[in-house]
Image (cartoon, rainbow, N blue to C red; front, side, top):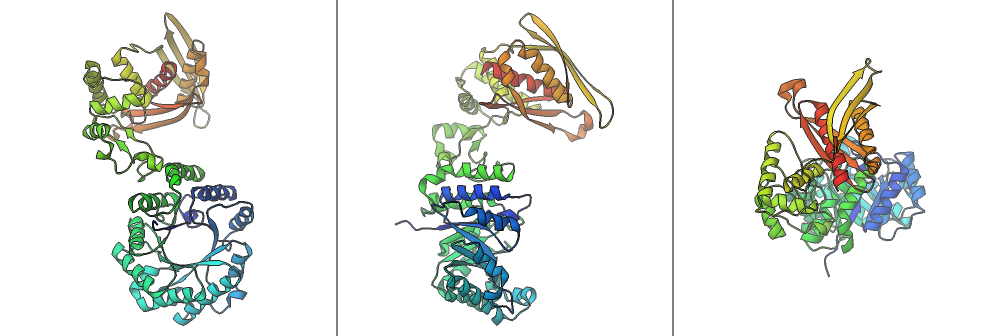
Length: 519
């Protein structure tokens, strides 16, 4: 039997403490349901003693039917000088009715002295009394040893006494927390081995990424014998974040051969990461290992040529194993292999040795040198390739002249665009107003094209990005505009570059509509 590792997800509690992260009650219910479907062992829903939203979440969560996970409420040991049975915060943990209660307590003598302002002996009593009280009421208790690694380095005997106090009182798991995120893997491994020798219950690990070592520290503990790992989806959390479960799970399952979630779930890992980004309204991190858009993206010509022949040459796993996809980028770093592979993705067949392929690559590299970038502008790339293949000698329309004007003053400006478009032998002149020059330009162009191409009514601009390519030239600097468009069923990107922002915008817009007509 493969070794099993428990996945304890604290996205909804520790993750919610991250900068820019805000969950509504409905958000938390959706995330909890998705985590259960994914197959994690525990879901920490929040701290009912900290805010009304978490109390409401636990009330609403009672209608969820968990198939894989156990829901946990989070809190702390009782206050000093008060029995657990009299502590309102502890009683609140029972009131929400979760099968699991996770509590944290102090492990460091320094924290006991400076934060709790009590004796080391009283802290041990606070731990054992709280755990025993919760267990007496039928709850599974996971005990998080706050500052466990630092406390162990400071006074190993006292740290081990804290672990024993929780274990002897009935805790089902003793979790070592690198709360400040500053420990090193060898320190975490040594502390884990010491904990395993001190208590007979399973040991867990909870790490933070302040030193960029959250994943390494979690793996060090697991390699040392821990069997329970806590973290968050996408690594969100306090300060620089928690251990990222989208990295922990595939490392455990695909690299170590340990079982942590159902095998089929890993193929939905990228979708889970994107789902959480959507709920939290965060821009996906392209360079996130395993699940990021760049995780299996190849740009170097020799890399692409090798991957085309033998994928494992530059990929440590099959991207599909985690629900991701391979992406071949084209740029001035590209070779003809990049272009051939990328063209195939776009539905265009290229002969690697054909003169048209060579000329397309030469133009691509020249444009890249001038500031163009096609990594997020696949539609402009497709038009370029078709032009070199002779399949699109010219766009299905041509902008003959255009004019954009802005009238008024700050707060009450009016923008108007005039465009003369030639379609075949016919020319049409259209005028449109907009919320800004880009909107007015787009409206005028659309109005002129829709008369001849009614299907363009479905095409809309969904994103517009501008980048100044050289700050040294000030307001006369060359700019790159990337536009994303959609027709409701597909989306595509186009690019334009010019020292004139309006001209760069028009170029990208024209490519967007041309692509819609030639797809």
